[in-house]
Length: 141
Image 1 (cartoon, rainbow, N blue to C red):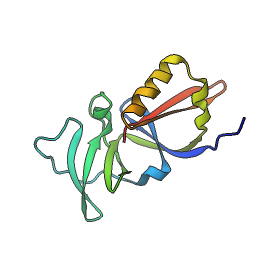
Image 2: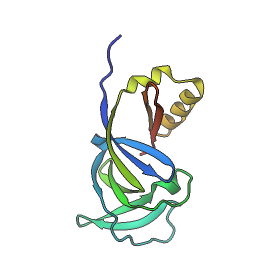
Image 3: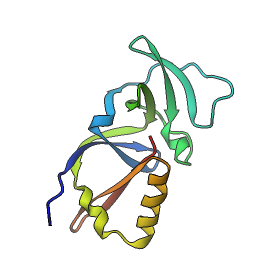
């Protein structure tokens, strides 16, 4: 059995959700900037913010994940193809490495979640420590 390579991930919180993204998808973390609200945008989209001279969509990640609106103390800039999106999150505790092979040992319910998220272009993974439990992450970017 070959050892899987751990990847570095930015860990952040949106309302009660602990989330992570591979560092390769994150361009920077910023303090909140002014946001211009737009009419007719989907729920969870706060509006546009001028970041480094370009308009960037700001998405309230807590609202997107089905919770209430988050406090938005940080913006996580995420690469989405040629564009960038600013995820409004409540906290950014730091960077963590995780081993993707954890998925080989997931119960059937979590495997179903993984299949659904991947069908929608996202990714799911977990980080576990003996005696401390597991943290599960997903992205839909």
